[in-house]
Image (cartoon, rainbow, N blue to C red; front, side):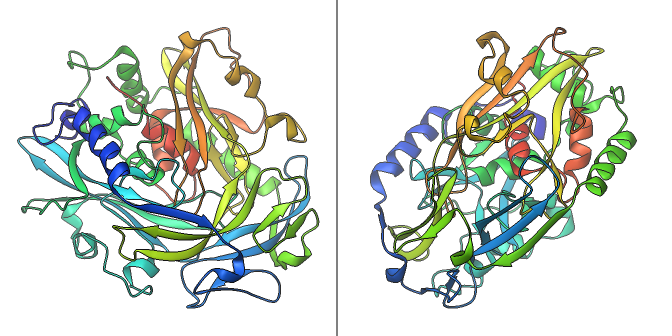
Length: 457
């Protein structure tokens, strides 16, 4: 059922071309107006004496200042603004088996910070404040299916982290449920196969971050017998299935756990609240909270009008990046099995000091501005086309970030690439990655986004 969905792009409800045209059409039809405004004009928001920004209800999220001290990396102390959103939201995909194929009910959703306004989103994408109707708007569509889901309906259910450099210890509930009853398909929703969603991930900024993080937890090899003779699967796809099934790895999972635990014990991370008005190197103006050198990111205020949302008009702060970012996995066959080069990365908003991240992760800021040039970044940026297995621009979450996109790459290297790597890096099979994905706060959202993009066709 799931593997057929993964390898199926034939959809009697909507062809892939029709889905693309639908997204283009919705971008034309839905009225979206996002205007920069002063913080003082953000209705229902207020600035506090320390410069932080909060919603009048005390809910949704806040922009606060933090003081960070660590002995990881080349910068040991800094202050910055960050999003404080302690609520756990829903990122949910509703599925149904039709004629032996699993279909996902996906939404054409507009977020104020999206690069192209409309992107393919989960069935349900809502903060607790949204579905508790703090904004006095309508209840999110299909919420009842997830709230009332029984254990036998649930395919996947995980708490997963958000961007550790942008959110302070933020998590969402990533959930996939399967129902048997008839499901009404509302105007901004369409049934899609997993294969179609994977294909659409090859389009720039087509499939949103929330869809990618939910689907990353779906271990395809759990639903397939040995792949010999499976039609429609590429050699790279077969290699990924082998990597997700095999017990043959360069380093054991036990040793990976010991490696990660030792690094967490080695490095300290102390994060405390501080006034936004007392952050050296930053300034707050009427319109933005920005670094003096105008690098990395800034906080802006916007007034939003979107014609088809639960609330059609509102104000809010957004995080605006200053440059495009880069996220890349290097993969290599070691003893005939694909391994991913994974790094243990500290970010100030992490729950537990370090999370597993892609080989290269530079979210904003030119890599030349980093105190030390990131490992492997030059290899990734100069990789020949023959080694590139995936290369698209992918957006970050448009509900909190303003037009932030990262170049996402998966690069296959040959035997000439060294197996010996720096201490904060390790080689993992896909099977081992999925083991870590089953639990909270191990694999960061950038790594999950790339894993979701793995194509088997």
